[in-house]
Length: 501
Image 1 (cartoon, rainbow, N blue to C red):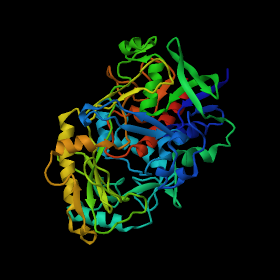
Image 2 (spheres, rainbow, N blue to C red; image 1 turned 45 degrees about the vertical axis):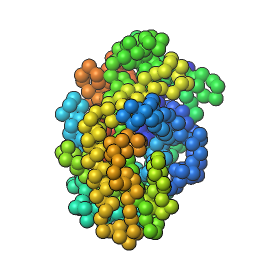
Image 3 (cartoon, rainbow, N blue to C red; image 1 turned 90 degrees about the vertical axis):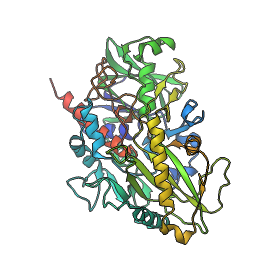
Image 4 (tube, rainbow, N blue to C red; image 1 turned 135 degrees about the vertical axis):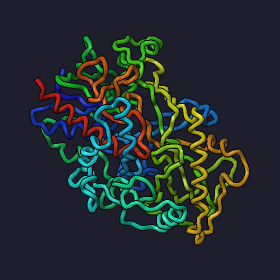
């Protein structure tokens, strides 16, 4: 059995950061285990390439359970199954979220995770030329900058936002973290920059950095309360590797919870129900699942506006009035969304809105002890009435923006939801994931926390989790920039602990 100092499970955003940072110590042997392939198709590297990617090649095709809050619909939860994970297939947006979110983490048991304490790690991830260096990075691996391709859709959307009273902030990741903004994208020279591109590929020649791709991890090896390694299958062969130091789970919000459960770490009653021996009774594993929902407002137009990415790189983070944190995100798509029972305009666009501070919480659970079976994913969408109320307010904000004079040159007219009708039913019928699930292995020191503030799994030695699953609550925008910072902080903590006697 081969032994390494660190075994990182999952080659997505967090895993790429961890493997690159931990292997900076030439004396530390690091293994990165990834279920997907090392390389994706060429379309993966293009900002507008997502629709061109064959799903079976690099995507997890996961579905939620039927959701009562969305009229019993099941929701598709794709994820990147390739080095770089979802940073290889997402919309490239590099937005941190509001400082109050992270201060809330620290106030509720995640000591050391306030915004001022996390800021050095946000800065470490990025190079943001021309921004305030006290708040933005200047030598980090991710090149974060707004697009240089101005387009009529983004300019029109910006005009409508400002006409509706949402002033432009010069940097949504800087001092003023609300209002309209030009979105930083992770990339340069017209190409996507995934976490693999930024962190991992430049250091693949390190002799102490090892990759195992197309390797399906079936369980963590836990003996006498210590995680000693990982078992995985690659090309039909079962492999078992040992961790002299630590195993670090970075398999994502669904994958990390699933692997803990498969390994006997989780709610004892659930593990017994599916026939898995209980090694650590941690009731919070797989709980606290939450995600952003987005919903469209569709407009017919007299002539078609265009964007350079299929979506506007102008967005907005605004207040619904229910929270001190800006909790509504607004986006423009340069095509009309298909709405059930409503004709899709030949020419038009969509103003999409998302409620970004959901109160509803769900679970990830196993179907069986078979690691090849996808888990049961229940985000419990819109179960809390506060989420329905917030989505109604967000819908009103989006409709108001769609009525602004800036759209006059396009002859825009709202077709959905349109006049009349039950707006709550409209939201329940048309809301869908914004692809930002978090929370199933959350940080804390209470009975339902899964990891402590240093990301060590409660009750299991030499095992940590470092990905979106540890977030106690969701940032008020996309989560990839935050995952980068979480992984940077985790790498620092692992290296610090390794130096202790």
